[in-house]
Length: 177
Image (cartoon, rainbow, N blue to C red; front, side, top):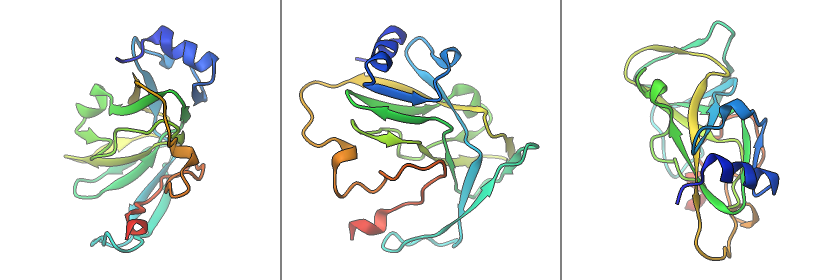
């Protein structure tokens, strides 16, 4: 089951869901709109290696916007810091963003119960498109869980994305080897 707007508000009141900053106008019928943060990251190397730490260069999106180019993977970040303690969060792109040819995540749309951070976005586009910090980029949908949780993400000693940040985080796949 997906949480409705009323259930999301109840979870926010009990701090089972945390959204900072929370803006009531971003709450939809069964989702919450998130926005593109001010930082983008681009990998330094054109060829990435899953067994190595691939470094990124960070840039701040100017007020005039930044033109994304096809063929480049950009790592973005949500403005919103979120915590989810009793539901599974899913991040989906907004249809208006998709209609501009922008994909905000290649594979990582599902969060874990206990995920507490901003969301790194895996942004690609099909043609050049100008984006702006603060623009609506996605929506969080919350699914009810069935049963008790033994391993909350934020309590796992080997969780790779627990450090709170307002910047996109590069792949930590190399830590799996």
